Amino acid sequence: MSISGKLNDAKKNPVVYITRCATFSACHRLHSPKLSDEENRKIFGKCNHINGHGHNYRLEVTLKGEVEEDTGMVYNLSDLCKVIETCVIELMDHKNLDKDVEFFKNNTSTSENLCVFIWHKLLENLSKPHLLFEVKLHETDNNIVYYKGE
Ligand SMILES: Nc1nc2c(c(=O)[nH]1)N=C([C@H](O)[C@H](O)COP(=O)(O)OP(=O)(O)OP(=O)(O)O)CN2
Ligand SMILES: [Zn+2]
View (cartoon, rainbow, N blue to C red):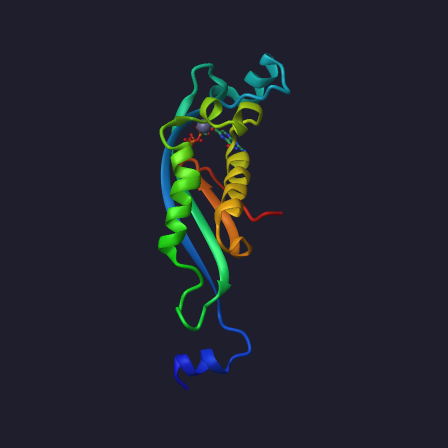
């Protein structure tokens, strides 16, 4: 049977995961207003330095959904690219996250919080938000965090 035959015969179309990557550069300082200066220094160490430090972040956004028969796509990756660009990259690229992004004025700019923030930005802006499966953020080559909306 041909691939298209399988697509047409199945009750449900194949479920496929698609990922779009993007990069942005930003600076931040790990500091929690809920902790004393001493506790901040103890917990965050060099990342609590008053003048901050920078990262070249790599973002991976994954959608999960059925392959539509008429388009052969789960979601147009070009459209996903535009959403990521307008609602995440423009907001964060070449910014001081703690000062330029409202949310991080009161929430520590850890990669965990960045992932959750980006997840909600995407939910608000995707035309099919139910397809959002995972937001993964590489803060460095060694530090990788992902969020699945739980
Ligand atoms: N749970 C988390 N821990 C840490 C986070 C975070 O977001 N969540 N972030 C940091 C810092 O922002 C820091 O800049 C990371 O730097 P570092 O640990 O130096 O990471 P590198 O991969 O660049 O260097 P290594 O020497 O390989 O660790 C810290 N913790
Ligand atoms: Zn950092």
